[in-house]
Amino acid sequence: MRRIITFVTVLGFISTAGLGLAATKMGSKETAWVSGKVAAIEDGILSLREPNGQIFRVAAKSDKLRGVHVGEEVAVKDVNGWAASINRTGKGTAKSHTSLTHRRG
Image 1 (cartoon, rainbow, N blue to C red):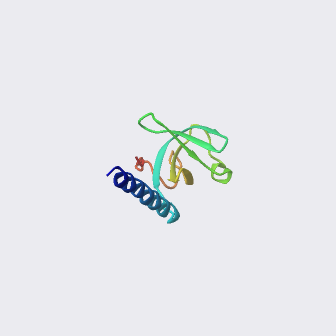
Image 2 (cartoon, rainbow, N blue to C red):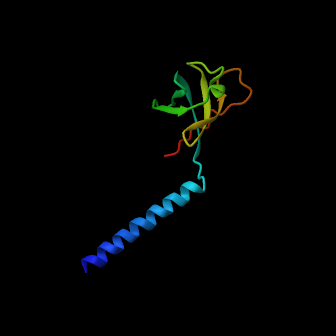
Image 3 (cartoon, rainbow, N blue to C red):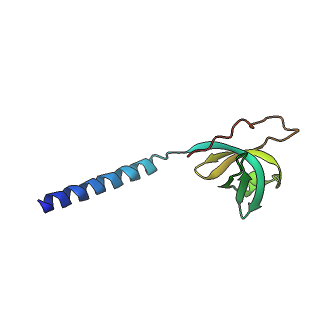
């Protein structure tokens, strides 16, 4: 009886691990818009202070960070932990994403 239980447990683990690999290969993308004030930019990491006071960090390539300064209000499109786009939302901007404060979670 123990052998059957052990076999079923191992078989279940292997099939579950296989499903996880299949999902990774399919390229699932988690996307979220996060807005807030730029708190810091260090080593390619953009830190935003959200309206609720929490700090949100996202990696960004240098071309995305060009022209972004600490203290600015921005909205960041986060795709799997990387900034796909950064838009200014403060005064004088043509497009505002201030209502987009959704986070995945």
